[in-house]
Length: 88
Image (cartoon, rainbow, N blue to C red; front, side):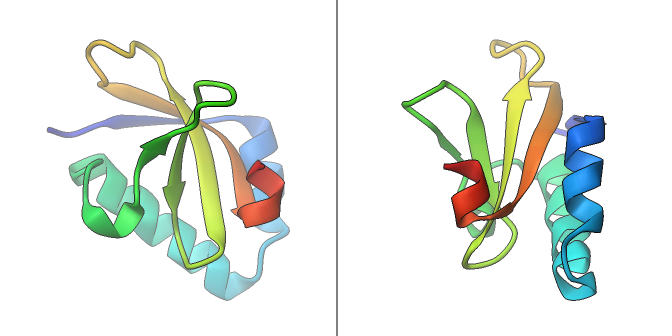
């Protein structure tokens, strides 16, 4: 299943503040997510605190998103990106 991605302005602003190496990791993770959102390396999980979803782009790097339609899961809108603390 291919997933369409949406990116918020806040996500982009946070992305450009990351190191070049982390930016590359984010792009790689987003491409993988598009093709296989459940890939084990992404460590996909739903957060209990706010119902948002989280994937990893490195050991300490996370991205937050929400499904446009939780039932169909065809489009994910990415809201935040950064080290683990930014998404807590």
